[in-house]
Image (cartoon, rainbow, N blue to C red; front, side, top):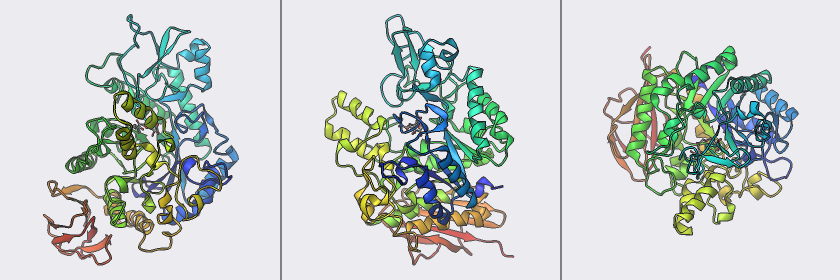
Length: 551
Ligand code: TEU
């Protein structure tokens, strides 16, 4: 059985990974075809974003049937082949379960719409206010009201995301049983892990107007959340200690995460939290352009590292996923220091305490989409918010500049396999534009090159397996106040590891507050790096140092 502390998870967005049938959309067979590449990288699990039957209004996060595969992604045989071939290479599959909501195309919702009381009770229907407005003033995460009116019932249903994603009513025990049955169905197919989409939003509290925000405080980490997770755990994955689970926790608190991801294993193996990725937002507002607050980034990363360790709880550590801009564009440099900054950012994450997640293309330093026209955007969230910004009177150019930075489509452009036509992703017309920088950023040119970003990620994945100080060590921040350097220390038994990073393109001098005698260089992103008590750090320079106990 794998120990998830030593493992690395690789996220695949199948639609943009590899198209083998020329329809411009990637599918499961494309993943099977690239298993040797993933094995070479060394990852342990593949998290596949949803490939279930869906109208694809939110690229599969609007599930219409949890047990069937959308024909656009392939067949159940394709899935079984992928599962078998992955297992043969020691790789487990992690499925993405979207249980906060279903598509309004789901049979349950259709029956609800037809007036069947059993299925109406699967969702959250409420009367509007006497003045004809929705039940509460809550906002959808994708913009606009979180309530959709249905004239035939003179009622509204709740949708925290798109209006075609209706929230399930977890207070209904039948819903909880249905969800557990789905999890068991996939466990029986040999799945080795689950990622639970926005799982901390399932327990709704009071349905009241929010005079301080968009309503999230009424349903985030809600009143019965821990009870529901424990119940699901006991009914399903908790019966198989080999299964790993990760919960996507939207706007959560650390105190709740101690329980979600506690070592007692009563809820989940680990959690994704997002506070460290809101450092280029204005509060919770994403659709603005503000510079990255580096002090805040460090403060958040470090406090979560220390807090979770103190409570024996486990983090998923990451910069990238299918909802986030590409990290090299966001916190690094797409130009002169592209390679150095991509490697530095990798070191920061992979030496932390937690299970690292890599998002497809991150391992070759893929950048933001670089779209030049609005018509290239596909994401429902981006398109809705573009409209909202324009309605508020913002110029098209300003609204567009915000999308360029924050749109989720930045990470959804096709995987860059080669420098050829459509980056080797498809022989047809890709569903979303390929980044023309595939001419110089592509997997083919990096796999055999020992100095590539790919090789650097490969080394980090291996080091986590080799050194318990990385997989198990404690955590302590170093020189938290430095305005340019992000540095920390890990310790396990007699071993001490230092991860020291210049986060900026400007060289800087940094003196380690702890003696570094006896340290040797484990990894660096410049060929001639030298350890020393005082370091003259070059642009984006990163050093990983190790001191081992004399034996
Ligand atoms: O995302 C949850 C979520 O709230 C965010 O990541 C969201 O995309 C972002 O905050 C908006 O600014 C999950 C999935 O990862 C995402 O792809 C889905 O669209 C969403 O849930 C709904 O299922």
